[in-house]
Amino acid sequence: QDRAGAMATTAAVLIALGSLFGHADLARADDAKPGDEIAIEAISKTRIAYVLTGVPGDDSISRAGLEGLTRFLVEKTALEPGAPAGVDISKDELSFYPLIYWPIDPAAPMPSQAAIARIDAYMQQGGTVLFDTRDQFANGIGADSTSPATERLRDILGNLNVPPLEPVPSDHVLTKSFFILPEFPGRFAGSPLWVEASLDASNAENRPVRTGDGVSPIMITANDFAGAWAVDENGDPLLPTVPADPMQRVYALRAGVNIMMYMLTGNYKSDQVHVPILLERLGQ
Image (cartoon, rainbow, N blue to C red; front, side):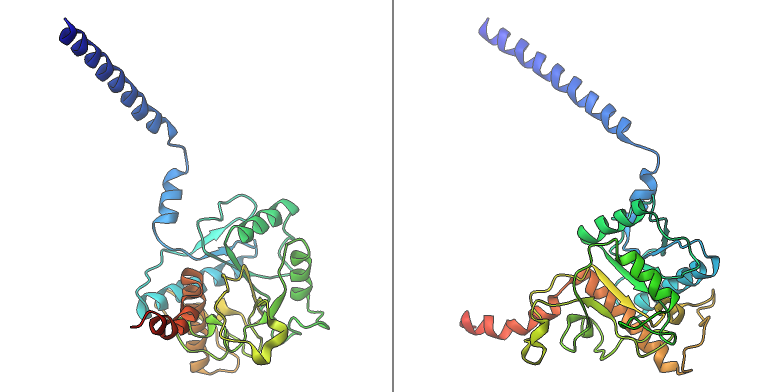
């Protein structure tokens, strides 16, 4: 009788578990929501995003530029990014993208406070925004700059939690994350690439190779990266560089590769300098 009771109990448990798992399947099916397929597609491959400004010319160059950079990444690295994504910062999910390229155009509507708050949250949670004023031959981003694009950028940054910035130092991981690069030109050359300042930026002369950095949540240039990267359907450049130097475009594409590798791997290049010391301590 005890055995019969145990079997009955076991049967009851199995029935209960079957019922539970059945409901779990239903729950999983019910959890599917409109837009899930888009989300799955967005995270299935690394994708670079660009801000939809509402200015058709800007948006088309941004897309063509990121398509050109994507082609170059596939050609030169093991990374195979998905198609670039245009994002509406007021409503689209931003966390899918490690990097968002934002061309600044004073003709575009000023983003709402809610949209800027979403960008701020994205940056605080590990994403990076690359702001491009594209005004290297207007005034740049110096203290005395008055170009309309720079003024708009200042308005946007005034509502963000922006860390102290500095031009990329010669020892920064961005200069060696893939290619060795002393500077970061785009369609224009001469503007520095600004990133989050290191803790010891005041001691630049004696600063060691940077090893403790996380990834900068913000980058700023005036060199028009997307303009240099932009290609047509045949892969031919859409816009000339200034000055018209074919190698400047190559260096601009290499800059894009370094930025992407930095975004995806952080400070691993800087960490390599410690390998000999670690091996020595381990008696290798």
